[in-house]
Image (cartoon, rainbow, N blue to C red; front, side):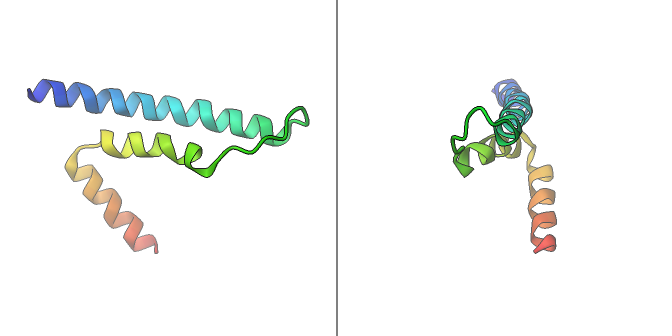
Length: 72
């Protein structure tokens, strides 16, 4: 069962990183092009980061949370 958790976390990291590239490139394309002026909801820009966060192991997540709290 441990292999399933490992594969799932790796898949979440891959999906999250791919999502960051695709969603943010599309966001900046629509932001700077004059073709379409639709609004992208803020949670769409946040969703790949959630996949990346849950794809990290527990030690990396704890380190990330400590880093964010220090930046406040």
